Length: 269
Image (cartoon, rainbow, N blue to C red; front, top):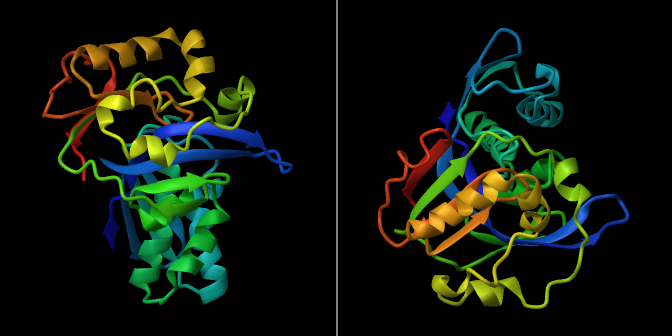
């Protein structure tokens, strides 16, 4: 079985408080985008994983796709499989690529072996693996809160708009991103702000990480400014990573302008 885990962007990201468990509560809109990995699951004599594309750090046995398989295998006595992941979504980029891979592993195994796992149970498996994973089970625009693992579907339609994602290859760990954050409750409801025309978002829909990371990585601020120069209706950092995205009314090819970086551009769904 072949599936294509996709990335997401954060449209607005408020860090509202630190939790007793050490995590942070957030408010954000997660929106799926078309930058994708490729994940293949096949039957095998013994369990194995194979990675191609972007190098994935860490021990293979600790990979999030392996952990997803292990969860389901323990509950459903699954036979061994081979997991082959072609990694294209940049790592540490604020795009949720690893979380998508885990969620799509759960969904693919459910379909491949006809396990009939309910949507809520798939969410439960996903939440054990990471804060963003549950969103990718839904994989539709959603207002996310809590650690980012709680959500409600959000009727925000950007279908037909053009998006450009620029990743300069700066790896920002979650620990580094949060180290400079002072959580505070936002003054306005993000859902209300996002219900207004996109032209109004620039000064009011913000990613809290920009305030601490832009002074340290000035290139990120420069990319955002460049996207606005080229006509973006809205531009922002995504998540706590180093990807900057711009949303445009019409198709805009910026591959040449950002040729030294990883760029994905396409129609929003």
